[in-house]
Length: 155
Image (cartoon, rainbow, N blue to C red; front, side):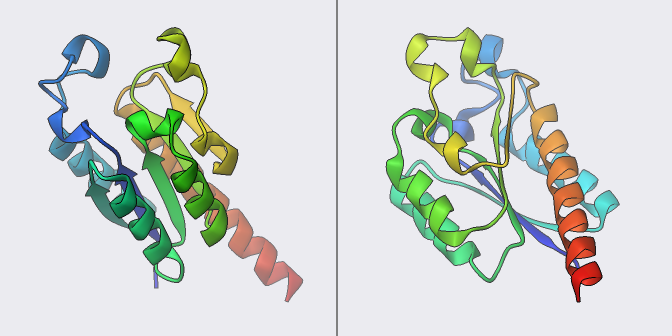
């Protein structure tokens, strides 16, 4: 059975394509999902792609991932800078996680420079637009493959 990656998207990402295109680009979230599905198929992994404007729903989905997903890619959007709850959920499920941001959060307003979620992430990819999701899929599948090989060598 192939690995499953849960790709979570936070608030306002449902407005991609029309929301501040000078910052976030003109691609829609559906465009990004399509690209992710195509690249995931090439890597032999399944994806579960979701978006919510509600912090609690994102936390619930992270909890559900325990036992159902092999890795998490999360673009927490504005919750990056405010959500200890999402951080705690990611730490609790102990699933390899990569954080993604379309824009370079370090070139933006000072309050965006800190992400609580980063403390639970194996890595952070920001500033590459939708390519960040593709890079995250590539990195996470490589991490999962290496962990599987290590586990097989140890048994």
